[in-house]
Length: 376
Ligand SMILES: *[C@@H]1O[C@H](CO)[C@@H](O)[C@H](O)[C@H]1NC(C)=O
Ligand SMILES: *[C@@H]1O[C@H](CO)[C@@H](O)[C@H](O)[C@H]1NC(C)=O
Ligand SMILES: *[C@@H]1O[C@H](CO)[C@@H](O)[C@H](O)[C@H]1NC(C)=O
Ligand SMILES: *[C@@H]1O[C@H](CO)[C@@H](O)[C@H](O)[C@H]1NC(C)=O
Ligand SMILES: *[C@@H]1O[C@H](CO)[C@@H](O)[C@H](O)[C@H]1NC(C)=O
Ligand SMILES: *[C@@H]1O[C@H](CO)[C@@H](O)[C@H](O)[C@H]1NC(C)=O
Image 1 (cartoon, rainbow, N blue to C red):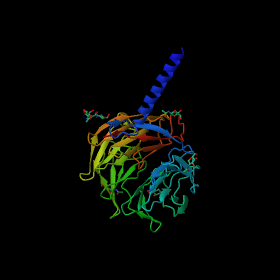
Image 2 (tube, helix red, strand yellow):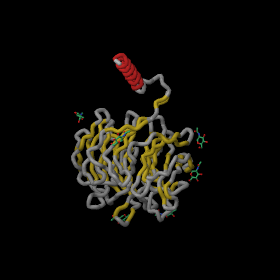
Image 3 (cartoon, helix red, strand yellow):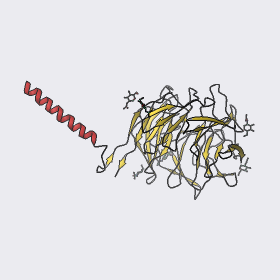
């Protein structure tokens, strides 16, 4: 009996050592072929947030701002300490606003909707070194579901959006950080909201799809910052609202999923080539997705996570696009199903998702990090 206990003890010790060794493997692994990708929960934010915004600051921290239940504050995530720190409040609670990091490292927040369901034309700047907000002049129009794109000249192009509960605008304006002022620039051909906008390598801005759904919204327009004019660009193969868009390392634009009443949700994805100005279909995702988030990984692949699944439900699934094969591959599911969340690739190559809603419209403060598969 006594011997038996000793053997059991020795066996348990050996087992623990083996497990320890096994645990060590993933951390030092220059000579191992591959580590599988995975999601891990990190500390939760101080607030539940949906329809908030998030951007990567110059120092590698992440600024998360606003969101529903209508918060005026923001919080900063430090990937080194793993801590979230609340900032002071913005001038208003905001959701469906925009957040853009300027060349000087400050962060521009524009528009959105406050807790009284007012549409906002106010804008403000966050200074990460002082952790303070400062009001700047108002935009000409109130806007929600608009886009903000940092141009190569350091100015920010604000495009479209709903400017009251019944009207969508084609109006656009430019913020100049040097003069700290707004100016109206060329209007789009179409009124547009819930679209996406990307900066092409040639300095032009491609604006993609969106509502109103009464239009066949596969159309796209191109903004030239030199002439401040818009031209209609080739249409996508499918109309899309709430799609996810990203510029690949090769300069092409990948558009994934989205929604349209004529098609329901899309699993289709397409590529725009700025040199030919043509859209071509590329691989289908493993499932239909709208309101998914997207970001570029260090190996030039693309991660898409979460989706709205209708009836106040969302998806925890995620998948990766390989530009070399044009194929999508499902990866680990997130721990939480999410829509109305944010996604950013951090400087360490990991991907941080925050907040959003789960099944039954359950709002989250939770956040998790995706560690991409490492191959050698
Ligand atoms: C991070 O949070 C922990 C626990 O709340 C705290 O002890 C630590 O001081 C924080 N670190 C920083 C840099 O804020
Ligand atoms: C909304 O934008 C349109 C221009 O697209 C403009 O004519 C209209 O006055 C704006 N409405 C509000 C409430 O700002
Ligand atoms: C929109 O584009 C069409 C076709 O290019 C053109 O006929 C029309 O005048 C444009 N409308 C506006 C408001 O720019
Ligand atoms: C992709 O999905 C679309 C729409 O469901 C379908 O028509 C098409 O055949 C699919 N393509 C492939 C290669 O499976
Ligand atoms: C890409 O997907 C297609 C269609 O599913 C498949 O035939 C092909 O083998 C895949 N290619 C790679 C490299 O995985
Ligand atoms: C998922 O989240 C729940 C709730 O926070 C937690 O109890 C559980 O341990 C998590 N699971 C994983 C695999 O992280």
